[in-house]
Image (cartoon, rainbow, N blue to C red; front, top):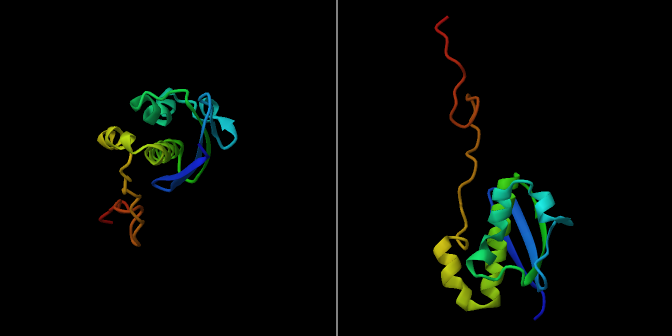
Length: 128
């Protein structure tokens, strides 16, 4: 098997991954993912495609991720890994689709409007 690559996005985060057969090492921006994502919840988010398919420790993943915050980055990585696993074998698709890992979450931050403090928040009103 050659190197598989895939792309995952969430909010403003973009994750490019390279999947190869190996012993389960996941490097995010040249650092181990447990060091990059301190939170155990985010570590589990990255692992979810492998645990769903019971393929933990069978593949090495090299990730380049940029943009957004750590939660968006973890979810972008999850999507990229899921896409690579489907590319690897079409039999993986139903399980990952059922969990919602292949669906792009299209929610984005609403833009700020003029005359407002934020997208919807108005400036404080005062009669005087």
